[in-house]
Each structure stands twice: as structure tokens, then as C-alpha cells.
Image (cartoon, rainbow, N blue to C red):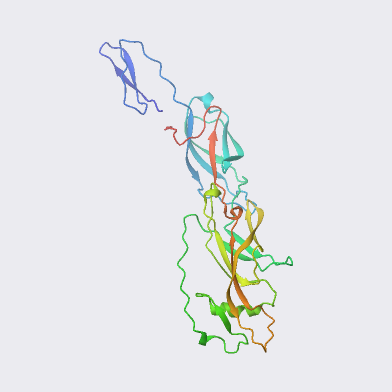
Length: 306
């Protein structure tokens, strides 16, 4: 509450003060003793931070100072021992001493070197084979929370007559919408080899309570899939590598190649599809922020400091 005294005078000549307190002005009654004005509640408001997007190195440490403009109100004893508190997901991580504050607007600085748990925009995935080896890593972008997937172009239908005439294994069965060229591409793998031919999905960052976020999945297509096979996801957060696994589910065969009696194939004959849930440890983006506190004041959006 801001109080600004304004000089006035009663008809009898006694001096009074008008106080603007965020409400309608009131006039003191000269016939009664003056009530002692109450001091405004000590509080702080953060007005601006520069830069608004903080740069960090690979370890998650800030590489530039942060300038914070704040406004404070209160008595000198209320504003002693100022600290900037760095918070991640509602948990205090660091406290930076900024000395005693004073009433009014001022700028304080957070030196570079603050460790922040920033999240990478990229994650990778690979499928773990039964022998412990993995398919080659494939990198994925984590999209913004409010982003929407781009429209998918409809693949042009290719008649069976356009299939590779030189193939010793023509397509025997195929589900609607499956790319015929992808079916033939399984010939690059050995008969029992687990391989990925394509991936599909649109994955977003998540914040806050992840239990309230919808499940995000990626669809994999390839060879020799089985439910329960593990997909390994890798990303970095705060300069630390995060590795999480998630199992394949809903495995099904979506196309097959013919097996002529005279031909002994040394490659898989089934193109398969499966779904994997992307773990929230990969998608979760830390909600970080700052607050300011002193001996008897703390930052608040409701503070009415000038």
C-alpha cells in the first residue's frame, strides 16, 4: 500500500494529512487526535530480468550475468540481508546474496556461473536387440508445449504393377497406407536381424505435473519386433546425460513378402509396426524461476511498490 502525504488545513488552522492508500482518500477530523499512519507492509516485486532467455554452457551453467530490476517498499530494517532465490519445480536450488536493499527501484545482478537444469531440445532413441546390441541412434526434436504437428502429406498410391520386377520376393500382403518401397527395404537386413525402417511421432516438452499430461508415443516400423523389446532414450539435462528405457507394445505385422518354394531368402519376410511410450523423464522441462527475499520481505505479484 502506498501512502503519499498531502498537506491540507482545517478551518481552525490545524494541519492535517491526506493519505492515498490504494483506496478513496480520507480526511482526518480536526476535532479528534490524529491517528498515527501505519507503515506499508514490506514487500518486493520483480519488474524485469535481462536477458529474458539465459544462455548456459553444456554443463548447464550460465555464461552471462543476469540483471534484475526490482522495486521494494518497507523500512530499512525490513530490507536487510537481501537474497535472490533460484527455484526449479518449486524447490530452492541456490541462494545468491545481494546485500541490503532500499525502498524504491533498484537493479541487482546475478553473476554468471549459476547452475541451471536446462533441458536439451534433442533426444535420441535406439532399439535394444536380444543380443544387447542396439540399432543406430536416431535424433528427435522436442517441440514446444503449444506447437502443433505439421500436416502429413498423403503418400501417392503405387500400384502393384510398379513393384520392382527384379525382386525375387514380391509383396504377398500389405495393409492400406503402407509404403510398398518400405516393405521392400526390409531386404537390407539379415533374416533374424532387428532393424528399424521408419519412425513417426510428434513429441513435445512437458512441464509441471507430468501425471496430468497425455501419453506421448512414437510408432516404429521395422523387422523382427516383439512386445517387451526395450527402446533406449537419451538426452541431457543440466549437463548430465539422462538414459531411460521403454518397452515396445502393440506389435503387429503390416506387410509380408512372398516366399517362393524355389527361393531361400536370407532376409526378413515381414514388415512390422510397434508403439513405444516416450518417458516423461525425457520430455519434462524444468520450470525455473527466481524470487527475492530480505529479513522481513519477499517478492510477490501483489506487492504495490511504486
